[in-house]
Length: 330
Ligand SMILES: NC(=O)C1=CN([C@@H]2O[C@H](COP(=O)(O)OP(=O)(O)OC[C@H]3O[C@@H](n4cnc5c(N)ncnc54)[C@H](OP(=O)(O)O)[C@@H]3O)[C@@H](O)[C@H]2O)C=CC1
Ligand SMILES: CC[C@](O)(C(C)=O)C(=O)O
Ligand SMILES: [Mg+2]
Ligand SMILES: [Mg+2]
Image (cartoon, rainbow, N blue to C red; front, side, top):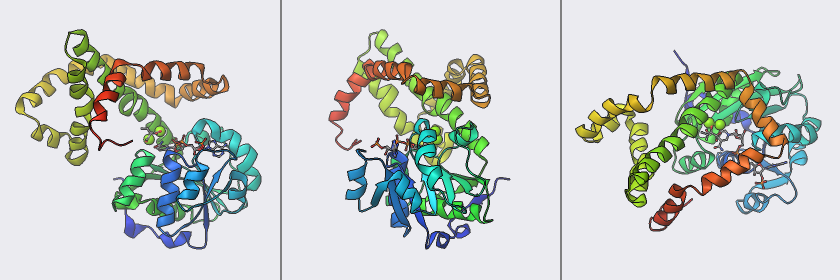
């Protein structure tokens, strides 16, 4: 049975007297830096001259330095720069400033697992991967809650790396929700599969396909938007709160019957076969290779796709409708 770790299993005191350099101040970076700071940890944010995040971090009351200086001042270095930028930053600013016995940390195993970063043997390496977006890691912490985290140890030189990782995850608020121990391999492969097949790729295509079907059949785009996109969150919130059965308890029996009769016609055996292929492409490194090459080519396909997706009619109608829902602040 999977071992879960909660607040009583974590000793935040292990970070006392240590400085944590949080490199990057984006979605995850701002959440890690602010949550740890408010948990009493000494934090320094590492960025680059001209970074738009610099003034945000300073205005939030955090110490900020260029990445190389932050690493030099730190005992624990958390890499929260975009995955595709990490290898270069590591070579230029992180590795030359790491000291024996330091802790090098990641929130996702991509670069270590796929060999883009090879840490020195005298450095501890761990991962604390929140299972949620950075902005939620922050907002949940502020409410006294937490986002579940995975922890993994890749190299343990000092003998206490797992405990330091648990302390870090507790400082983030993760121990309030639950922490699971994993490996870099398991986290990397499940995270990439989950975001491609279910959470991001799967959900957005499902929403658009439903919206397009209704609009092409002559229904109002506004009605299609509320039905297929806006209400998705309301349904998923229930699933999150009480599982699939709780959602099915709350919706009408008519909806529940339709769920059972239609669901498998949408996610068919072919869809499941394709999911297996997507998982294989993650496991055998083809997805990682394509993403690394796409970045080396300055992202031609990624940028074109982003532009097209931003102009999809569901985005156009949604922008207008959300103006009236002033509580939906980004
Ligand atoms: N987004 C998420 O919720 C999740 C992300 N992760 C992982 O967390 C890591 C960070 O991702 P994410 O938070 O999305 O990243 P973001 O793109 O949101 O933020 C990246 C940050 O890095 C800064 N940055 C970029 N280049 C450099 C550089 N050369 N030196 C110093 N800082 C730099 C950026 O500054 P500026 O903007 O000024 O350029 C920005 O503050 C990744 O490994 C990702 O897989 C894990 C779980 C969830
Ligand atoms: C689902 C996307 C994610 O894996 C995440 C928020 O957990 C990411 O890489 O941003
Ligand atoms: Mg994830
Ligand atoms: Mg991810």
